[in-house]
Image (cartoon, rainbow, N blue to C red):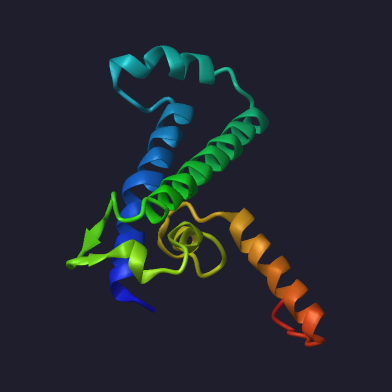
Length: 142
C-alpha cells in the first residue's frame, strides 16, 4: 500500500464523506442547532424510519458519485489541477484515483466511519465473478 496515497484517501473520506454523513445524521435526528437548518429538520422529522433510510441511501449514492467525479477530474486534468501530499502528486501515485474509493479495500470501506455496505457487497460479487471466470473457488466469498 502507498502510505502517501492512503494519507490522502483518509483525509478525503473523513473530511468530505464523513462530515456530510455527520450532518445528515444530525438533520435526521433533529439534533442540529444551526438556525439555517431548523426548517429542513422540521420537514425531515415527519419521515418514517423507512423514508429516512431511502434518504440516507440517496445521499450515499450522490456523495459517492461526487467523490468519484472529483477524483476523476483531478486525474484527468493533465496536471492542471494537482493535489500534493508529502510533496507527491497523488494522481500520479494511482492508476485511477477515482477507483481508490471503491471495494472492500477501498478508501470508503477502510477509512469512513460510515462504511458502505454496497461497496462491500459489490466487492464480494466481483471476487466471485473473477473466481468463476478462472475456475477457482474461495470459501470466503458469500
